Image 1 (cartoon, rainbow, N blue to C red):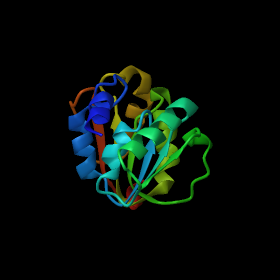
Image 2 (image 1 turned 90 degrees about the vertical axis):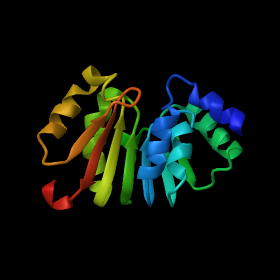
Image 3 (image 1 turned 135 degrees about the horizontal axis):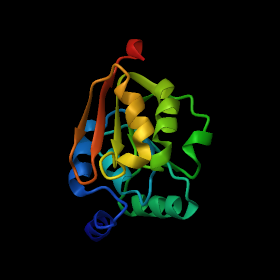
Image 4 (image 1 turned 90 degrees about the horizontal axis):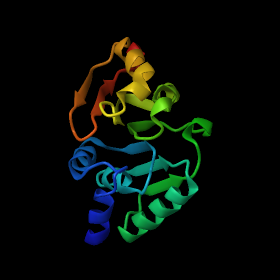
Length: 168
């Protein structure tokens, strides 16, 4: 198990351990993840949550994530091999983590908002390293009356603080 965690931590496309630790302490209740990849961030998200519903568009990655999570004995995760933008979810989430196609962040965000509960948190990865690919998203949220903070962890983490529904 430890060997697999070390391997996943060293994968270029995965979050780092510090980001994982942060996510494990921020995530609560029902979690939505967009971009499962190999399941490393999913593992961290699952630590203190009721359930994680994770979308991965690439079939090979979704299968690898399912296998990795099984080895890691994670039971409160559902990995869905589908494009999140084509999903028909009608559930409400306490926490959302976005780490998928950078040019789609604005579309993800717009689709996510109706799926969030009062005072949900949304966390987005790669907002420093891939800023140019998601500039439309960053411009859009800068115009909304939301509290947000960017942390300089690895490739940049944007935390959109509890979302009061009346302001959106």
